[in-house]
Amino acid sequence: MNQSVFFYLGILIAFLGFNQATFSQTTSQKAVWYGYFFTVPIDSNWYTVTEIQERHQVDPFSQNQFLVRGRLHRSLGESWDSSTGMSLFLHHRIARLDNEDFEWPERRPHLDATFKTKIFKVPIEQRIRTEARFYKNLDLETGLPDEGYFFRAFRYRYRIQATISIAEFSNGKSLRLKFADEIMGMSAGEVGALRFDQNRISGDLNFYLSRDLILEVGYLYWHQKRESGAFLDQHILRTVVRHRLDFSKK
Image (cartoon, helix red, strand yellow):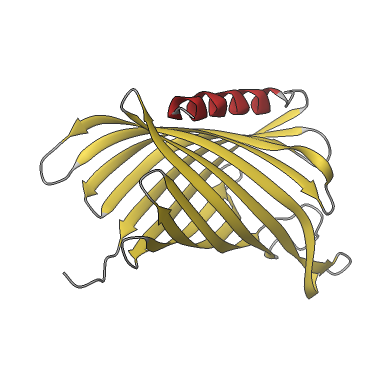
């Protein structure tokens, strides 16, 4: 199949998924995300990525989430990449609990596959990821953790991403613009039949400070369906440092 077919199919999926969500009864929030991602090569085909992120709401300024995600990647030629991993989320200020300082743990094992191509010389990535979401059991009367975890749902994520080169400098430095659209759905567990979860649209400036260090600054628009049936819009400013740590011998 022609590689451009994957690209146009991805655009269609993103467009249809986004338009499944209505915009009635929408709450708007502002947030800031910041994180540190580091990559460690193992050999020419294998590498690990670790993500550490902190997420805050702006008004009022309060902690929302802290997360650590570890991924083991396998490169499958020039066009394909796959990974498996585990995430730990700590959710703050849970509305159903009286204790707002409690951190509600969530574990998310995942599998994903990424297809890479170029359309009109622009690098395009399409990623499909499946996550299983397990939350810590809680005593809702006391707001304290109970033993074990319960399965809430599977979440399915499709992301299409394009990177455009703006300027190339000496010593490996460059400036690039990255656009992405990600559609998510959930099913099984407490959710039941497959339903729309959220859509994320983002634009980021990537400052390549060296071959191994990237500073990423951008904006993310988050449109999510809530349990009540209403929708949540978040306007997110995010900053990420991406660092490649190569410990292999020269």
